[in-house]
Length: 451
Image 1: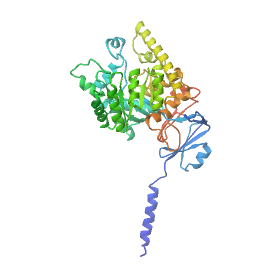
Image 2: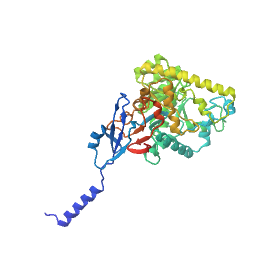
Image 3: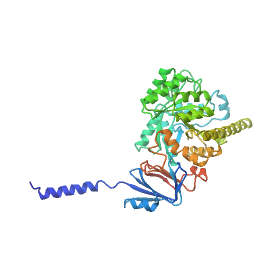
Image 4: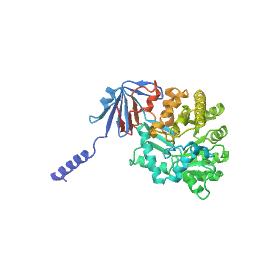
C-alpha cells in the first residue's frame, strides 16, 4: 500500500521540526595560559578544556582541542591565566556565621565564650527560614571565591544544609555542590551548657542529636537518614564511649554513609580509629603511632588550618574593644596555634597519611565575604610549612577522595564535572593566588569571569 504524498510531506516536515527542536549539545571551549594537574604538579601550557553538557570532554593543546569542538562552540579565552580544578572545602558550616561578643561577654561565659553566644543567637534567635536564607548567601559567596564543592559538617539546624543542598541542585539558588550532614551527633553537655531548663531541650534539639548508649547512637544515625543526609558528623571529645562510637560508625556504614569524627585529643582520635571512621576532623593531638594506624586503615585526616596562621583570634575580634590584658591573651593564643599547626603539618607530611583540608569557617571575619574568609586557610597552611602543591592537593584531588567523589570532581579530566577555576598567576609559586580567584565555572556554567 502506497503512502499518500501529503502524508509523506507531513512526516518529512515533522522530522525537520523535531530536529530543529533538539539543538546541538551546548559546548564551551576554555583556553588559558596553563593548566595545573594537582596530582603531579605538572603544567600544560598553553591549555584548553572542551566542555559539553556540563562535563569535561577533552583536555589538551588549544589547537587540537578546538579541532574536535563543534562549530557552535562558545570560546572563553582566559589569556595567560592558570586553570585549576574547582576548590573543595572539606569542613565548613554554611548556616553559621558567629559574631564574637565584646570582651566582657566572652569572660562572663563559663564555656565556649566566643562561640556559644553566636551559636545560641543563631539557633534560638533565627527562624529556620531566616537561617536558610543566610546559608544561601554564604553558599553563593563561597562559590564566587572558587569553592565549587563543600562538605557541610553540622551547625545547620535539623535539615538546613539538606534543604540548601537540594535548592542548589535544583537551580533555585547559586552555590557549590554540597554534601550535607544534618544534625551533629554529640554527648549531652557538649557545645552548649547551663541553658534555661525551660527551653534547653528545644534549643539543643534544633542543632544536635544526643547519643546516650549504643542503641541511641544507631537511632541518631537513622534520625539523620530520615532527612536524606550525605554523611554523619559526630563530635567525640572524650565524652562518648568506644561502644557508642563503634555503634554509630557501624550503623552509618550499614546505611552506606561515611562518618566524619570531630576529634582533637588522643583518646577521642583513638576511638575514631578503632571504630573505623572515614575521616578525623582537626586531629590536633594525634600521635605518630595514630598517624601510622590511620595510614594503614586509609582514614583521612581533615586538617582545619584556619587557626594555624597566627592571627585568627585577633581577626575575629577586629571590631571589639580589647583591654591590654585580653589583647595579650589573644596574641598568645594565636602564637600557640601557629606553633602547634606547624608541628602537626610536618608530622602529617612525614607520616604519609591521607589528608585533606577544610576551612572550619562558621565565623564572621570583619570585612570579608564567607568565601574570602574560607580562603584564609591557604595562607595558614603555607605558614605551617605545607608546600603549595600539597595545599592544592588537599583541596582538590585529596578532598575529592575523602568525600568519595573522586569520579566527579577534584581534577580537570575527561568525564568529570566541568568545575574549573582560574587565577592570574601560578599558585605553585605563590599559594595566595588561591585567595584571588578570577574565574569560576561550575558544571559548565560560568559563575564569574574577571579575566
